Image 1 (cartoon, rainbow, N blue to C red):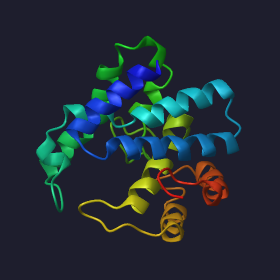
Image 2 (cartoon, rainbow, N blue to C red):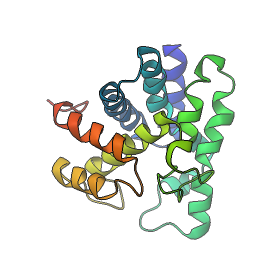
Image 3 (tube, helix red, strand yellow):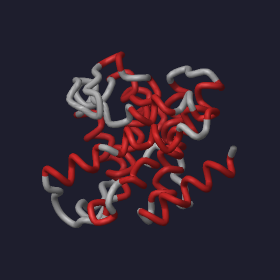
Length: 189
């Protein structure tokens, strides 16, 4: 199972460099948050796998879009949004990942219903997807990108807090903020 996860991560890494490290950090943040929320050990295993593979659907997105500097066009963003559903197709070959798939598919849904791919809101969004949303947002903010300078963890936490109740589930935000200072990001000593 772990070999399959590594192979999928490698395929994504070759398509979009930096994704493997990002995915591992998201998994660490997500599991710590899930533990704080009282998720079961079995659910935490599925959450870890979901974190490791949350962006695997980007394999189906044109590299030009993934590497584009600056603001995406409306069409580029529509193409990028397809990665959440593309992950379902990619992962359907692995039945043992089926509990992780709803988490992966919903990690861009928003608490207020303004997310994608299905516009779910509130508790309609699987808990794992709500956890991944916060974990991924934090990692993107502190890691930076071609179009955004990295924030320090305190500023990223303030932005997460500011989005509580709109973009993010307030309960998940509270759990993440409680554990975030205790998490040692991968690759940092």
